[in-house]
Length: 354
Ligand code: SF4
Image (cartoon, rainbow, N blue to C red):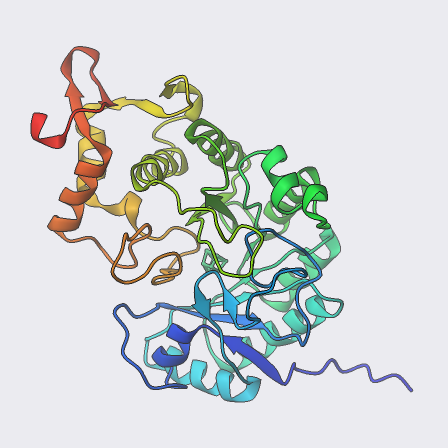
């Protein structure tokens, strides 16, 4: 007779920073994660073949890696006990379960969500490729608070090259967008996130337009800086230019908060953002707040050093920025007031010209 009670996966991967923060390992952290990051454990690699990902079917990377982070495995019951304590002590404010693509993954996610929810009063985000609307509904019914379906690339062409048919991967741009829109209908506005990697070959204009299109569908964008990992197809590609990343972070902040629209930005011939067409004092205050440059995504997700070494450059700041860090970013953005235009524009002049 078939066993109808789904089993909790015996092992689960935990990001090294999370493992230290919740007491599974000893170590020192430069910044504490406020979300507990878990990853489904599977003996073989992912069924997909994303060219930037160490978990990809054809990558030669360690199976313990995702981005530049190590994810050691632990018994699931031990991890859930540790999360329970960390939630009670208010060290952990959210749990995020990242999932590889393998045959039983949705059932594993459902069981994990239900078990964690029984153990701790904590919102749970799922980051996975659900494949169909029914699976999205099942994850919502299990009690997940949010879902992220990674689109990763800013254009359909880059998507095809990095995750789709040209990468021998199973995904399509059109279907991923459809699933994201299904997810908004099921989880509700502003409860759906996607991950967007900057540095795959897109222009700033393409990235801004992708963020705008997603925001128009009420999908939040979490920005990641491309990180080359040894053993992946893209291992030799450099990380994105920091100044370009800052301009896109600012674009994301303005678009997400409905303070600007990418269609009104000005771009140069290479697609570089040259003006946001936002009132200058407003933009000045936004930059000075440092908020656009903090980690983006689900509430309380700070992903410390996911894309960067602690020595920098820090693409996504895991904590509120210091005045020195904001001054550095102003220099990176090379902000110049063009009073005549009443818009903040970005030029090649240095901040000392302001
Ligand atoms: S934004 Fe953070 S919490 Fe949300 S799915 Fe992505 S990694 Fe997880």
